[in-house]
Length: 289
Image (cartoon, rainbow, N blue to C red; front, side, top):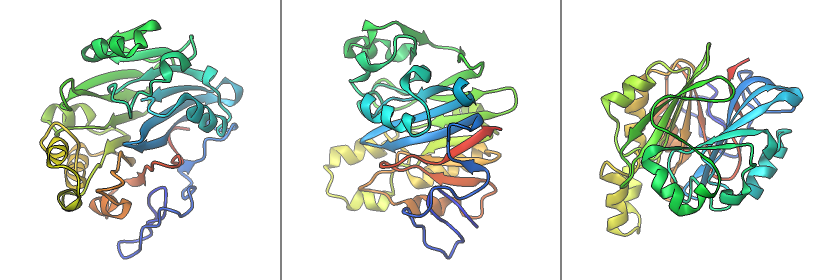
């Protein structure tokens, strides 16, 4: 059984994060000739989080960034490898404004034609960060992307201001995107229920977290229900949500997690699985062909 952006061939096989990144006909590289709608996680870790939703065909392809935690220069290079540039970006959806989700360089680095979309709960922090020097799209209810997709925000626990998860619906496909979750709630499960593709945080292994030399206050912050999801919590959430086709695991801790451990909570599942990395993009997970 083939799984992930590395290789996961069976329950007895070893996960190889250095394996091939193109592993299935349903998961294609975002090449200039690609068409349809695809999700590619450019990077996901405490060092920076950024994903791109690409839609359209050929030179008419456009992009929506979900979080912008990489520098504009690094993001530009990664988009260029897909045949895109920053002028293709229509909007940036921010889950929140922690430094690993919104790099300070984007205050001046975002094209003037792109919308920076922040939830009302984060407006004050956006203004304090300098992001308000450009027009903000402040939302609270449903948001419509320029590609026509509808975005339903779900505010979740994370530190003092919370974090926003997104359910994004096209006419024939749906994507759930959720990271930095303190805890899973019935409302969150209901909002994400039955999405085609679910990108969700699987941040830490509790045993590795407890055994780490991190300070106790940091361990409590991560594990107390307002920080991050463990592998076990992620697995339970995915089973409750029931994604139809594909799951992408986000924001793995490099110190307190391992791709094999995270993937082990999704064995024998009825969906494909991709594990996002900190140092290279995932293949594209196609939502619409």
